[in-house]
Length: 292
Image 1 (tube, helix red, strand yellow):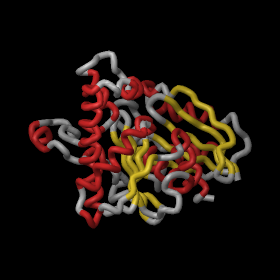
Image 2 (spheres, rainbow, N blue to C red):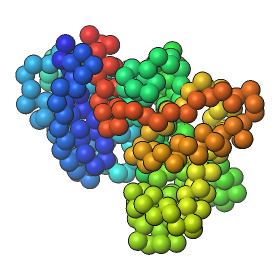
Image 3 (cartoon, one colour):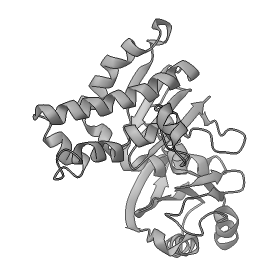
Image 4 (cartoon, rainbow, N blue to C red):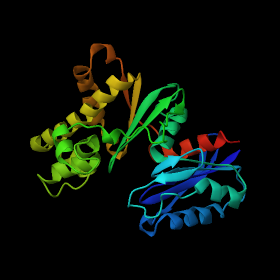
């Protein structure tokens, strides 16, 4: 059973063939998101035409997704004309195979649940830290979608209410404004403009003032996780995103969480995601395999 899988991000489209839970080979091409949703749909259709031997298509994508119809129900202005894109309908009509479509963070969480850090854990939370903060809720080895397929917007947790009350943007005062990788870079580059990404920041961590700013940012991460732990009472949380390869972050989170939560919640285990850039592709594979 071969499944053609796509992971559509704002910068790149990763794609490949997956068989029996193994990615045979993967490739990447630019998304050219500014050209809009119709361009992305045409791009993955053209890529799929290069293959002639697959049984289903799995698509992991940015934006909010209705997985029942395989339609983009909301996407921000980073991808114009993406809202309303009917991936499932159009791709099934074109290629005559089942098509599964899911939000990228949900796909990554399913990938981790089946093949990575969440394997053997039927229920856990998954968060990714990058430009913003994405979240997913795994319950009984499936995604909990909420009433309109948008559950898990953990970046919208209010952690700074005074900023929320004074602001106008939906994310003013919210978690992702303070705990995302973007927030870390903004915080540190205000002190040293040469430190423009996470790699450079952690390479400078021996400087006490930089380490203090990193610790301040980790406190913001822990604030949001503390809220989630008290709401969901999870046994496990999986943390992803490129910045989470830094071992200092996970070590500090594990040290600080028990000091922040009620003792009855302190059993929660915090893990780093294991699958990296393959998580969304493997999640798309699993979801598509369920349609066969």
